[in-house]
Amino acid sequence: MRLIKQIPHERFLIQLHAYNGKFILNVSLDNFEQSFKVNEADFPQIDQLESLIEGAFLTKCIHRFIEMRNDWTNIIQSN
Image 1 (cartoon, rainbow, N blue to C red):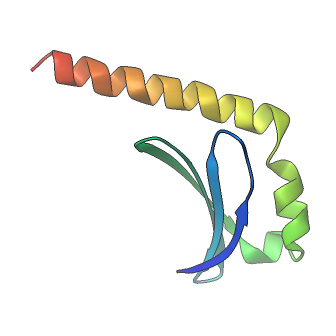
Image 2 (image 1 turned 90 degrees about the vertical axis):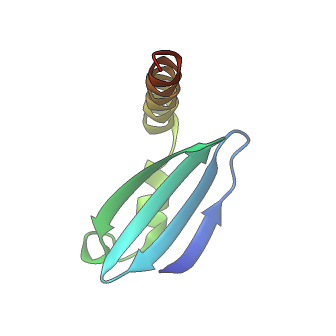
């Protein structure tokens, strides 16, 4: 897997990788990570993909991170 680009953001670590004909978008926050795989052919220009990583998409990512943290906290507390 090859790192193509790190996209600056004040809250998340956002990295775009290339692997086996796919772009892998990793969005990380603390100990949690979300990964999205898309075909390279769907985005011949990386800028097209990068332009989608904003606003509503990142808002949904933060909500998923909160859910992930809550799930993890609940599982730890139940043991």
